[in-house]
Image 1: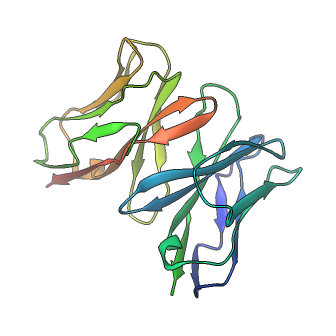
Image 2 (image 1 turned 135 degrees about the vertical axis):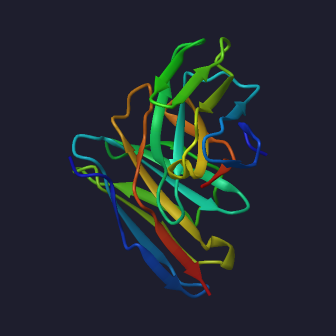
Length: 113
Length: 109
């Protein structure tokens, strides 16, 4: 079974731009979660989508948004980028049932200049 | 502040020694996961524990979930350089994982 894939792996943007990150979950997984990882804050939960609906949301500003398609693939968008948005963005997929065992992709490294 | 507190933050040991990483919280979780992450990569799942008091052994790794489902520990016996990495615990409630800050483990050859 193929693992979780994320594209692109690396991205450089400037302040004020917007960015879209993509995640393809493991086949059969219906839940996709997004996380931001920084050295200072660790892994912070952004949001989770299950069957195209946002089921959970973390404490991030509205500039961070996401969506999930009918094939369970998900995208995350960040508008009006700030320097502090530089981070590793991780996507994780799961069956969406308890226990919520998540399988992570390799991440997208975003650098905002 | 993190919902889950991991200790120690850093651990450096010699190959062949044992180590224990702790994960504590005041919250009750329906399940708890442990992950290991290497630089520039996503976390890799090691184990999921569900039942209070549960102990799981995977080769040289032993995982324990506290009776009250608020804390957990990871014990590695006879550590090897390949065990080096960032160890993360994550507690689950309502399909949402909350992560600890992680323990960076370095095993010297």
